[in-house]
Image (cartoon, rainbow, N blue to C red; front, side):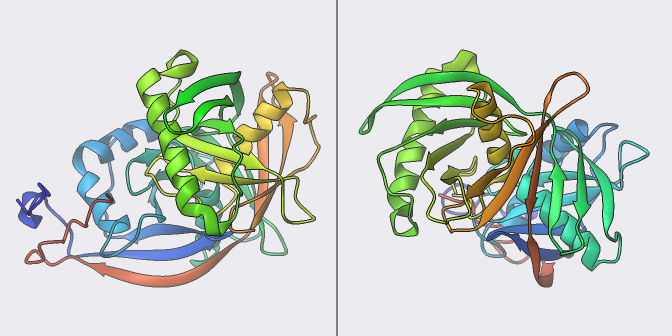
Length: 325
């Protein structure tokens, strides 16, 4: 064992190399695994995600954490599809855990598939642990995704947060679970450290108190007024790995739209223009599903930033990466 309790490189089997393609979606990075990672077992995407958690979690850390990555990277492992009409399956993961869905990551996967010549303009569907999602590569290079149905679980949920006081927010699901609130704090990049501290304190309190009937909330979203003239609101999102989202957050935007719809503030078809803490933007809207579900649609852009081969040396004491603090 290394100092601090990290497992030695010899404790787990690693490939000698994993090939990846990196992109960013409105500022938030995605790392798509192209080759070298053993395929997980399972007949469903959730079973495959569970197999990754049991047997390949060391590769998650090694691929997205330091020294090969950093805390903001979201990884995407491409698998064979579950449904015959899907192009592929995707399991998303970050520096701390696995994600049911990832909106910015799906946009990044679509751009990566285009870069690899595996799709062209038009509609395509993918299987994820949260369900089957759809995407369309638009003529202008942007990507429109159709997420799994979103829902508002509870509104006006209060928590008493040490050092902050009473906080009120809505609990909603958009592929991940969110607590959406407002704080009397500037949503500016210069204030990221304080926003991270405050949202982590809210997350810790929610974990301790198990609010909203124990809904498995693992993302905190702070909403405030926009700084862009072409946006309706600005957000700061603390993700499940403890890092903030540089994009407006696709599943978070889906959750916000569900909460606003529950309050009667966002009718079907009306655009919701979500600005991120970095100043980037998603455009979203809701449609009604066949059974009355809230179906979120989100449009944004991604750009390829690099192609790389990650090397794994068994003599390297940090072969398995460095877990975030």
